[in-house]
Amino acid sequence: DALPICEGTRKVVKPFCKSSVKEKQPNCIIFNGASSNQSGGVVQYSWETGEDKYVVCYFHAGIWFSCEENISGEGERCRSFIHLTPPAERGVLWLSIVAEILYILLLLVGLSLMCIEICHYTNVIDGLKLNAFAAIFTVLSGLLGMVAHMMYTTVFQMTVNLGPEDWRPQTWDYGWSYCLAWGSFTCCMAASVTTINTYTKTILEFKHKRKNLERSLKSKPKLLEHEAGERVWDRYISSAPSSTEEFLDLSSNGRKM
View (cartoon, one colour):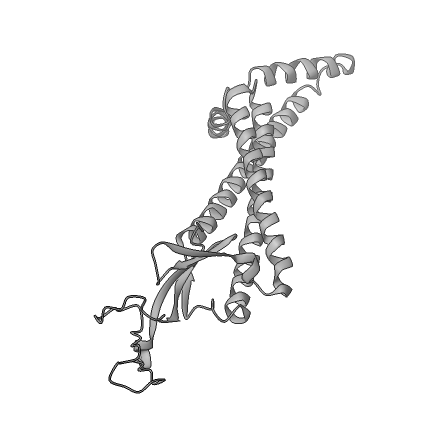
């Protein structure tokens, strides 16, 4: 089955009714055989005209398959979407598929780094570094996802215009999975930008504190300046708050004082 990235309807010519019972059957055309009262070779057809000759068929298409209602039976009839696309657009479709796979892989890498940061980091600096790398991977995955979605949209529109005659839809729109894909891209980018902003802000706070410590040691003898500076800085790092939020709170309270 295909996830409904795109879905819609198309008109299909009604097939001949298989049943010989002369009752109203909405999805087929009644075919009357030769009557015993008529001369040989004369066959009667009961043709429907206008819109009554067609039936509206629902379809939904994904990356791999395009499925539509089976009007002559139960279930759905599915075809490979790759074979439906025009030959000139299949390369773009394959690029879209590769970009989608890389998008998922990079997103998993970012998620793994975030889990490591939550469970195994030793101090604030290490945690921030892991968080920053996770944000970078998430940004890259989001950009690849955006490119993949746009390429698939282009390929689908070209298939609607230049695809097989027995597949082209009359009406179509984007499905729930397409909206979900763009929603995940938005969340990825928002989380990544927020994380990188937090990392940059915290690192700048650390550098500002270190400069203040180095300036306070300028009045001491030069021989002890280097060793004292390193000891004070190491003590400052080892006594850093256990979380980024606590550090930012302490920094803001210090500025107020």
